Image (cartoon, rainbow, N blue to C red; front, side, top):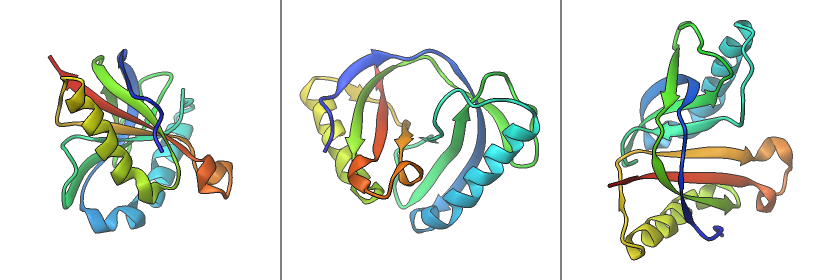
Length: 154
């Protein structure tokens, strides 16, 4: 289930990122270790996250994911191994909150994309998912929340 989508303007957000290009089937094996590596590198520099972690897909996901495991940060980080400084650009996005387990994200994105088209918007190639509440916040997937953001063109 998704909340009613809306259009909003974002601001520039400094981030720490690990960029990966992987087959879709590998997502479950790389996400956990990558997130641990990212958070350890940020903590080692004494920098605090300013919000929940997210994935920024640089292209529309297909059989290959070209994306960044990301966390918003309070100050720019210094590159350390695979962890690099990054930023989410200021842009106009279509946004909604998806409620449920991660296996339903594909359908949720489909609903958001349908809303974008029905409302006369054109989506950019990239997108990001903010993991507001997930397994760390409770065992019941019905309580999980993922914020879906799709930049709009024009």
